[in-house]
Image (tube, rainbow, N blue to C red; front, side, top):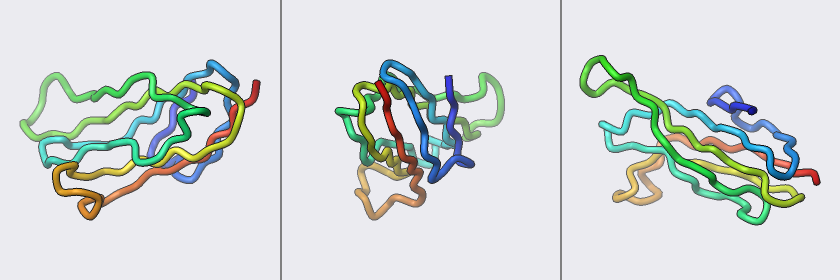
Length: 106
């Protein structure tokens, strides 16, 4: 399974129908900021799962990772964009964005 991180921002990813990738981004939900899908081409790529990974032990308020598992649905091209924001404060609260292109082949 392919794994994308912040270092892969702007990447172009090639997938086959049914293939799954993970997007793993640094997150600290104790600040109120979380990663969320801002744009996706649902006919091309679907969100199979969204989860968080935080240390079992450590200081209160320590960061972790947001994990998005995406599955290639049908052949086509699209863009996936995520934003790091406080949902209740709206789009103006977004302080980071992560985007990549995806091409799905049969």
